[in-house]
Image 1 (cartoon, rainbow, N blue to C red):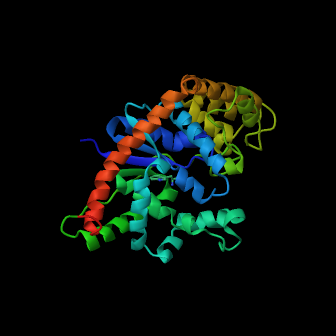
Image 2 (tube, rainbow, N blue to C red):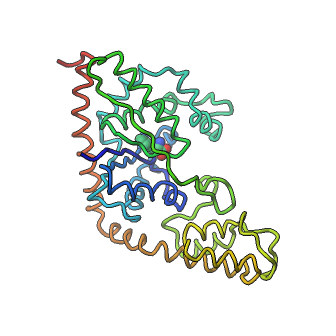
Image 3 (cartoon, protein in one colour):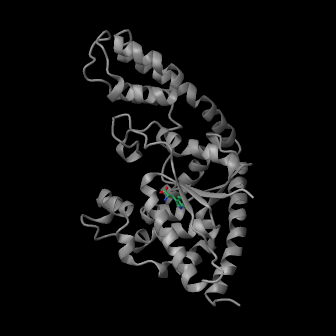
Length: 336
Ligand code: TRP
């Protein structure tokens, strides 16, 4: 039997190259080896977008199209919509007794997000909703409703996997010490470091406005690459360049590694100027996105197929989840 992976994203915007090289490449690899389930976490998205349900709703379909366009294969990966699984709400309530408010407040990811989003959470976090603070509990339910063996994560999500494991250990200890229902899940750290933005920021992120989206047009890509940060010492074409801090070089290496060495030596020797280099990178990105755009077009023209894939994946997840809930309710003496 294949091991099960559960992973997911909040539907709050289109995926970009940071997602591609950060998490999607891992998922493309994992779909051959694992029973891979990808959750569109619309309920989790509402925890910090509760005032904007239409944004969340619109991005569910967008996220599905992004997933399918990069080559996630519906025969190998299943996709599910969190809000269509009522068992998750039940398990979340039961798990919520097993973690303290104090523990949730100490999770570094939560602390950082609260500090980042002052417009929603208040200057000192005084407006943090109960639902947002509790989202790690609901995420533990996402993982353990289907007893996932592995959860691929970026560094910032690792503390959430730890809390999830603490919850189920406590669950086993109190309710079913002789026949533990759950076993620890393994957080699989992405081999790829966080992908930088075009502006040199250490994170590519929509809120920072430094992304190249998978759905960007040629003109948008060109405009963004032209504005990317390059070596400030290289002013004229024949000045010797330093590709180290240059974002054009950084993306070149990701997108077209086989041409990188040539680019690097021509930049350093002053045989290639920044404008030409940016033009070539733009072409390379457009070529790279070509098959992604083609797949997207196919699925955009077949929306009923996309709906069906999401429904089927959700049913599969629910069927497994209902089995887990029977065990859980028995252990809690809520059912015979
Ligand atoms: N927290 C993830 C994000 O911010 C989304 C998510 C929801 C998730 N449930 C999950 C990830 C379960 C892994 C496992 O995008």
